[in-house]
Image (cartoon, rainbow, N blue to C red; front, side, top):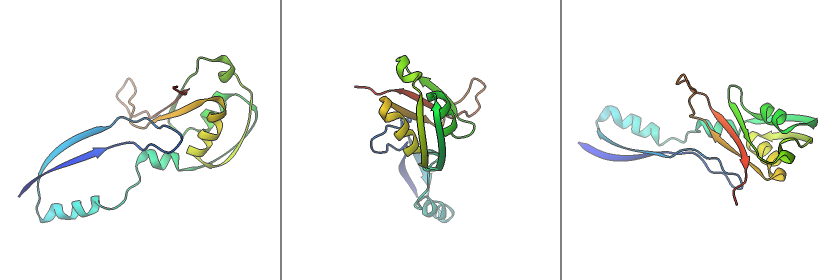
Amino acid sequence: MSIQRHRLIWGTILSSMLFAMPVVAEELDEDVTESTEESIESMKQPRISVLQSVILEKVTANFRQAGLKEIVAWLAPKDWAVDVQVKNPAQLHAIIDFTAETTRYQAFYDLLTPLKLKAFFYPNMMDKNDQLKPLIVIAEEQK
């Protein structure tokens, strides 16, 4: 028996902070047999995406008189690249006192909101050698 399924692979948008991630939709034609019924059953189980596991991870930070780039680099997950795209020098060179013991999402939100900045997470970015290199972009809020 052949059925057509639609599967969406998508990023999560959390309240108050935009996490941009490309949306990919693909159509699959598959024969459903006894062996695939188990895999279908396992797909129904809740799963935490890579992005969710990264932004929900607990972080601690305590900075006094630090710069934005320094704090963002500390909050970023290991092996993630950070690109700060800020045109306003006052935002970029602000001296910040920042303390957090919370999720990575909340820490970025608390750090960036007063500066009118947002974090955009791209967990599936590739480098020039086609190696996975996740990216966080810090940019100004769009009006």
